[in-house]
Image: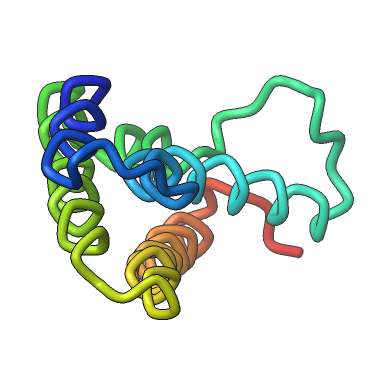
Length: 125
């Protein structure tokens, strides 16, 4: 991931952009934010141990660690590619790339949570 960030910075001739690293790390940011928000909405202790992160739910539904790691690597690569493309946009439009990626990841997270809820893996509140 760090290498992708360095490549993106070099591709933009060293232009510092506050959206660059968060866009590359979006899969992790969305996972943590979505999980914490979901736990708060269910009235659960966000500091207590749990197995409700998106990647944990996918593992618990039967995917292997290798499969989940490959999926995350692919999504991070996509986010890095979008980050590099984002740097070619006019500054007023750069926010659009992370916004669209975030929306896509939230839709995926909602589907995974709905599936997990339907099989009783997470609270029914």
